[in-house]
Image 1 (spheres, helix red, strand yellow):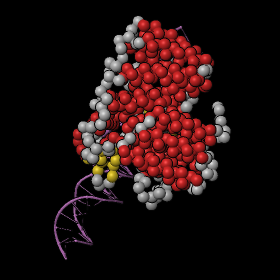
Image 2 (cartoon, protein in one colour):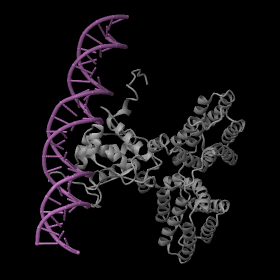
Image 3 (tube, protein in one colour):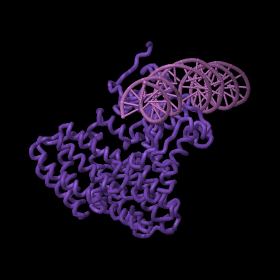
Length: 244
Length: 244
DNA sequence: CCTCACTGAAAGGTGTTACCAATGGTGGGG
DNA sequence: CCCCACCATTGGTAACACCTTTCAGTGAGG
């Protein structure tokens, strides 16, 4: 084979254009490819050893995420961050993997503070019996794991609980944020922003949220969730503010 | 600037695959193509009279929005609504144009209630002097137009004000919701959910938000925006609840 | 001599066709 | 009942014609 294939290592499931997409998406979101920089299909072909079709499909995908625009004669131009589709899970993923991680985490946390209290309130109104039961069960398990300091399984339950609340809210816009919230929770743990042992207040508040939702007390659920997230935000404060 | 040449139509917007994408996107989001339904590239080619390349690129775009998945041999399968990327502006647009419009509008309004108060608070902290001035100016203009009952230009100012607040918040996740909020405001007016003349309370509240943000009083801005959106939600109540 | 508008060629994305590779469901044969 | 070959269908490559946009060169007019 004359052409050197760039393999991301994943191999199975990762179709060819996907690896190219990943590489370019990472570079753009990381700023290695700055806004205004130009790309050409020929350049993509040569650099990744792919055909024109794959290069084009990749560009379309990038364009559909707002990372580039493609104009005739002028080529493909990298777009500035404010035209990126920051709700696209892939964009979030790339940014969490790159240097913009703490900025991203900060914005996402503020989004959580906005959305999750209302989602909890809605869940208190709309959740099924099964969901309410699972919620209470999760709170119990979280306390056990949290008090024994096993962070990773604790994170898994934390993710499940917040996802469940979003899903139970019945609002599709909230449901769609499940991946976002999961990414934040995972990133927070992996960034070392969690204490070695979850603080008792957090455990109590999770418990309070679960019970309020299960009991259908939507106002209590909302304020409990609000306090829980205030706790989260305060725990995050130590990161450098990074004000431009 | 300086270019006075007028492009045909929207210029770049009307490429070939775009119309195919639009047609299929509309059909899927409208439910005409039900989840589980299959598509084939040949079918697309034949139906729209396009080449294989265009058909494939269209499928990639649809796949990137979570509307379909494409697996070897098994074909392209329409996905259920809960895997759609509902924050993608095109998906929002299609759903607002189809039968899911009121459900969509309701979810989006709940999202606004979650996000905009916090965005207003953040704007009160972060906005530039220029943005604060523009905000006050907008409130004055809105009152004039609102009291004279000219709904369409009123809507334009309304959109500008809410967009400005989101932008001024400095949170990229909030900024990215500009299109969403604009779509809601536009859809609300076009759906006839607005009174012929904006109620005085709404005008007062817009004024209050603008002044609080301009003065940097973030708590006042937040509560004013919250009351404003409560007003919006109540005005929306007459639509049928549609409880599944 | 300088400025501006026209023109034509080059560049690069857009779309088409043909072809081969990989894959997994289907059905026939043992 | 199980296994295997077939083949439909998507994934990927290559070569080509087309069309729009840009830019440089050129010539006319001030």
